[in-house]
Length: 117
Length: 117
Image 1 (cartoon, chains in turn cyan, blue):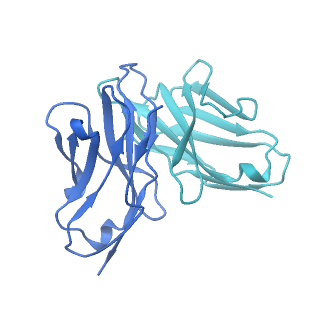
Image 2 (cartoon, each protein chain N blue to C red; image 1 turned 30 degrees about the vertical axis):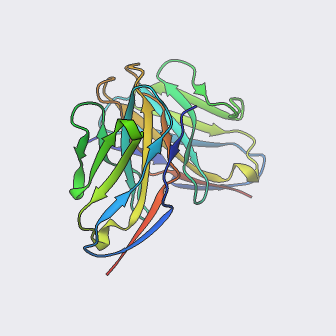
């Protein structure tokens, strides 16, 4: 149980275009999903917290107009990288929170490798 | 802001050797502690977690970790590693805010473990 999927797994796009990444919890409902970014040989950096039916909360330094997050249902959150530039190339990972405060466990998706040319 | 430190960035061991990976965090309040593992080409998986109770936590695949509050540490251990334990290991901490919707995780920089035959 507690499987999280991401689509696509890899995407290559031209500079200036927008890319949408989907994160789905396949066998549970997730009221909260998180979006992370991982640079090569570095740790995961939280970008934003996404709550179903409300606006996402962004971490300091993350541009909310560039990284649009929509959490339309309890099983789907999307991250759209708008007007992508080469510096946005990275590995984007989502996680979904399962259960209440007593469990506080996140389950991670396999990640999406974005390359902006 | 809370931070998480993993002291060993790269560890190389022979099969059957014992393993201990260090993890220290900076936040002084109540925290939840996690170890995640990322096998080559796979997504992050939860190894074990500590919320409360017995500070010695046992996880999957023979791993355990000990929470020492006075040292702000949560070191990961395994008595005898196997070649299949080759992976990257991340320590993570969340503040126990009892939000019910999942608390934000702060990750350490990760430790790359290579187990040689």
